[in-house]
Structure formats: C-alpha cells, structure tokens
Amino acid sequence: MFVVLLGDTLRCYECITDNSGTCTPTQKECPSENHQCGATRVIYYEGGSKIHDQTEKRCALPEECGEASVNFGWSKHWSNTQCCNSNLCNNHKTTNGRKCFTCDGLTCDKTLACEGNEDHSSEPGTTTISKGCVSEVMCSASNSYLSQRTETQVSCCKGNFCNSAVTASAGLQLVVVALVSLTLFS
Image 1 (cartoon, rainbow, N blue to C red):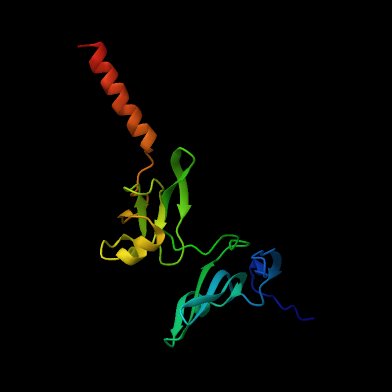
Image 2 (tube, rainbow, N blue to C red; image 1 turned 135 degrees about the vertical axis):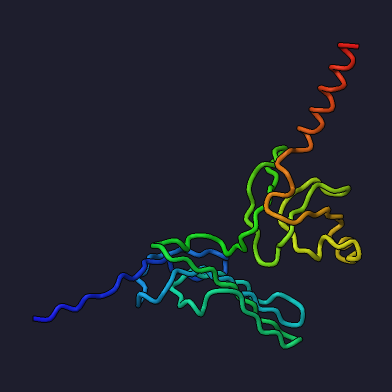
C-alpha cells in the first residue's frame, strides 16, 4: 500500500471583474504548494486613453507577483499583482502599501489605502479641502495644465499619514477657544 502525501496548498479567492466592475469571489484550492494568493489590477491604454481596467483574484506563482509594464508608445499594458501567503488573504484591492488620511464629511481621520502610483498624500490647499492619495505629478507646481484641468491646487507631503488627521474644523475650534479665553480672562 502506498500513501502519497500532498503538500499544503493555499485556498485563495478567485474572480475577474465583469463589465459592470463587479468581482464576485469564489474560493479555490491552488494547484500546487508553489502558488500564492494574488490580487491583480490590469490597465490597458491605447492612444493615450484607458481602454481596459480590470481586477482579478487568483492563485499566482511567485514570479507573477509584482508590477509589470509594456509600453509601445501608442499602447501600454500595466499590471500589478500583490501576493500573500495565507488562506484567503487576497480579499482586498490592489494597493501599493502607502496610507493617507481622507475625509468623510467634516472629519478627516479615515484611512485610505493608496493605489498604483499614488505615492504622496494630499493636504487641504487653497482650492481643495479634501485629503487623500495622489500621484507625485499632481503635486508639481510646474504641472499647471493638470491643475487647470482638474481645477485644483494640491498641497502634498510624502510618507504614511503625513497629511494629519486634524480637521480644518478642529483647527478652527482651537483658534476660537483661544480667542474666547483671551477675551474672558483679559
């Protein structure tokens, strides 16, 4: 009698976004112990326009993990696969590891996971009161065309949570409290 022992394989979520952008995951046993769980985002550009933007979850080999790009000038194919090594660990968006504060109404203490080339955090500027993740090109003062097109001037910082959780209203409250205190006690 022979007993064949199989190595431990991971269980991963598997799905591909449909035309509506929905990705309904199912669970799948990976084919070998060499596989990891992966979350992939693929973007295809043609003539400067985004033609295809798709996310998928699947079992992936280690060499499939990471960022890859092919650029022919008139077309570009970009993909980023984030891999992990525990059961069902790929139930997330494809983020890049950076984190910034974002606003939800008047409070700006919510965490936002940055995606793609969003490598800076935005701070409230002269024309925007929002906080979030931005690409470095949006931070450049020399990028006036992009600022004009989006009608925003973005003030940026680099580093996780560098855009502070303090809200504009909280800062204003501190000023008001200080002024009231000065008035009452002077």
